[in-house]
Length: 403
Ligand SMILES: Cc1cc2nc3c(=O)[nH]c(=O)nc-3n(C[C@H](O)[C@H](O)[C@H](O)COP(=O)(O)OP(=O)(O)OC[C@H]3O[C@@H](n4cnc5c(N)ncnc54)[C@H](O)[C@@H]3O)c2cc1C
Image (cartoon, rainbow, N blue to C red; front, side):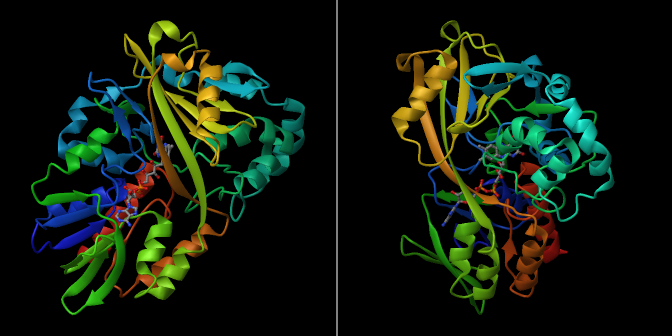
């Protein structure tokens, strides 16, 4: 594309949302993406025979109204697929055995004496300026938190979430209005990546993959974006939607204070490995996910909520630094299969923000430094990691600079 109106850096859901808003407003958008594929943390791994499973993000809800709006605008809303019965069946893995649970059953695993002793005080305390650990240990007791809640919380952002803020920006759980005309949780044919694919069909959007942005500077007619491949691309407007560490590095030369503000956000890494197994080979009960207590992985997410007659798909989200062979062994031991039963192993390593109690103050500082730069800045390090949080930030950045 020659002479784009806007350059978007990063083709995760944040950058794609911004591109979608801009393209629908008639702007020509050029998206530059470091990887060979779009989607970022959204990665529906697809096989030639049409089978897919989610190697990254996996669950979206009818409370994700901004996502649903894009689904409606792209025509995907008519093809929503409801998640099946396995969605409410999950396992807590401890000392080699799996305790199969459902949402109400999990309450029975709490030590009620501990809960009764703590709850009256916990009820009275606000979540403000408190971590998940401080809040829920105060409410249910520290042992209940460590044994039950901490592993489940860690499974959500694929990292220890004990230090996450209990409310506000960066928190895991937010009250959102549900759109009850849609199923409570759902997917799309071909996986969540269908949303990303649909966005880039807009004729005003061009995506260039395999292009790594290395720097960004103001120039009289707008911005200059430099790439590791040695290109210099100019446009009147720019949206930075890369991961937080990369955003800080891209901005450091020309926007040092902004870059420094972003660097206050801590980072967590994870290594995902996924596979599919012939249904006859896998005796594991159908489930949405398995969460371990003290293991080398944070969670194993299954595709069972979208059952397939032939295959079952699993993505394991490992702690960083685990050897490949050890990962394969762990997958096989948990699923009780042999390595030859695993049909194609696919992996991706990611970094994620690790919000802490003071996250709201960091976001406010970033936004202060962002003012008057003309840059749109978005990602999962503002409101939160959830897809809906990313879409909401990208939407509000579009409105801030274009209303
Ligand atoms: C394993 C896992 C499971 C999850 N499950 C859920 C879930 O079930 N539900 C939910 O709501 N959320 C979930 N999330 C969170 C959510 O998926 C992410 O927070 C969100 O998709 C992030 O989107 P993003 O666009 O902000 O960032 P990213 O998806 O990280 O996108 C950033 C993009 O920028 C690109 N980039 C980086 N550097 C450069 C560069 N120099 N030049 C050009 N491009 C660059 C990257 O390659 C990437 O494509 C999950 C996340 C993970 C990792």
